Length: 391
Image (cartoon, rainbow, N blue to C red):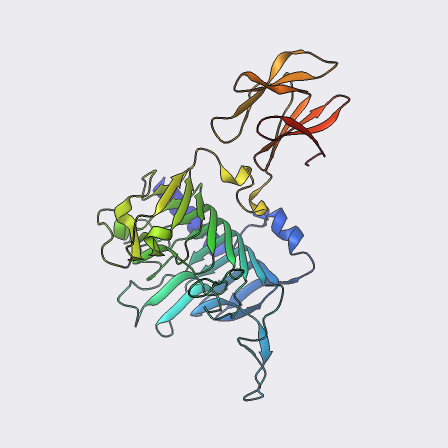
């Protein structure tokens, strides 16, 4: 299994990303914007709002640098990445993108960096990923003065210090891998030195994210969240047998432990189905982080961004199964037609109010019922109220 996994990762780096994994939500919502494609080499500026699609970047200490461009008024030599003005439409997407074999040029480096700071520069940027592989092959961490090298650095979208209401961006990632495979029998590569993902925006929503490396940090989550780690495998060889210690490092790091909220579903951390407390690092130790292990997939309940998929699940009479919402709610129909095509609607086996219908829809964790002859109804927790079709 290990040989197959390494082969597939190497194949992805050599041949570039496949186009089959296009995220339709991203394509629809970035339609009409500038698109960068093809092979890139060295530092490449990405001007938002835009999309990078079907692209491979090699070398460079920052392969993709996301910013805005303004005229260099000091030297009048051309357009440069600068702090003002901010575009109103602050968003960028990476779809089917590979970054590999970067070249260090000083203490800082990252496969992708979004430029910003805590003082309002690009403070509302949202960044989207689908089918992205980052393989920088950075050297091992020594200190922040010489090896401040990340997989991806998210400086834009910073809400401020302290966070300013109404400010801050987000990171939405699916099928994102930060790993540096090596031929079988060769020693593992450090891959990243500081963090696989250094996230300063308000929150990270990660679905099918995979990390393999040995940097001092793994997921560096500066803000309280809530953050979502779903259907993911978070691995870091540094913390297989050694717990995190001090104020830096870990499988997850955050600024303030007492404020951190992590929602986890169907994910592993160095093989463990739970995130060990001694693998969480904090700058401030004012209390314990809140780690919620969900019993439902939040990509299907409307809790997470719609780019992760449809939130509508349906159930019709006569079909097998049930419509599970957040436990302990389980919705089913009775076996017999009670009113000209309408079947009794059961919540945990008991009729919900006087509800009858011919279709149930779970839309954003709310239950809607369609009826034969009476229209649509919404369950408000105690009764059915008339509503529109939610779809």
